[in-house]
Image (cartoon, rainbow, N blue to C red):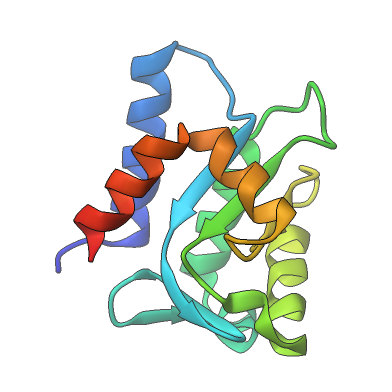
Length: 141
């Protein structure tokens, strides 16, 4: 894999500009694998609280994502981590809060609801029509 955090950030920025120049992100759905306390934006590069604290490139990535988020309704500015059980333990919850803190002064929530929970269904409905989500899941596995 030749993907980097910088190339991922550029892709987000390109898609945002292609949508509408100067647009900001209301909510961002990120499909990533993970286990309690950890997730992967890139293969072979886990995101943990310790790595976030030590890795300046990772901090810059999340700060840049925060700057791309809409400030119109700060309560709605959310990064949804999909397909990951990162928040499955205390370390995972601390990681999500640490990412939100890195994005300050932007007020962005980072959440990881389980797909079958009410919050998970709401997250899925934000990005997919239910039949499209089922098809997307089937194609991924």
